[in-house]
Image 1 (cartoon, rainbow, N blue to C red):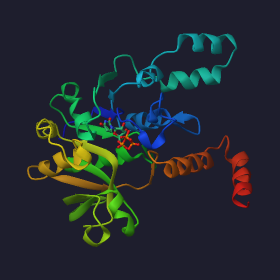
Image 2: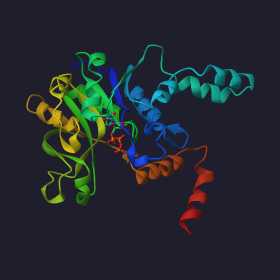
Image 3: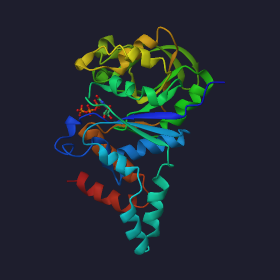
Image 4: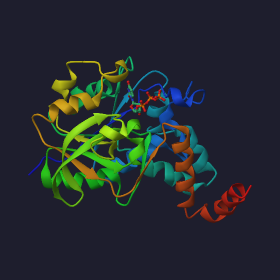
Length: 292
Ligand code: UTP
């Protein structure tokens, strides 16, 4: 049987330059979609998939993420004093179990591959998940849970993929489709960073969720810089593909790239329209705006 995926890494040390000035003093991962920060959605998705330990790779200006997953005594006492039980329950529900979170720092944002490598001691020698919190997933069940199902059946490494407009492949990491292995899963036989449409091996892009074997750390430890002069996770995964199977899992759902403004705004609208407590009030407001 394949070992259980118990640990998840959340790389949150990036500078979020596309969201300046909002991200000057506040981490991009704390931007809210309706009323929950992006990082909370990613943690919810991980917990739904059975993750027991959450590892955050943070950087400067990111302390508020640690605070978000801690008890807020003053706030809780005030809410309790005012009899605001519903709000209190919400805070308690989101709080991770004591001892189930770890924080490490990526002192310099040298790239996603380097951020993941910073978690190596906390992961040790077991397969693990990586979730990019700025890629917000909407799916039932969540994206990582769908991937865990593929992993339980096939083992190896699993990347979630989704279709993009074939003319837009140059914006994404694109995979090549090898043998179909059943259900949403297939063997990945190529990975190309931002290919032009005419040379792209498919229109399936890597959408920001990974299940990786710990051998990835040996490859990342070489610290080789790739595109953008950053240590890229994709480069290490390409090497890993020579030694191990990497499966693609076609995500049944939608991904919102909240690292860019349009994706972030679309996510707010989509999630608001799905919320029973506000959708009825929000829909006519949206229709009014669209009719302008
Ligand atoms: P992005 O490239 O989308 O994030 O990385 P960024 O660099 O913060 O954003 P821009 O391009 O400047 O606007 C995807 C995820 O990887 C993390 C980011 O925090 C984000 O969650 N990351 C990226 C790191 O943790 N460290 C890095 O060195 C780079």
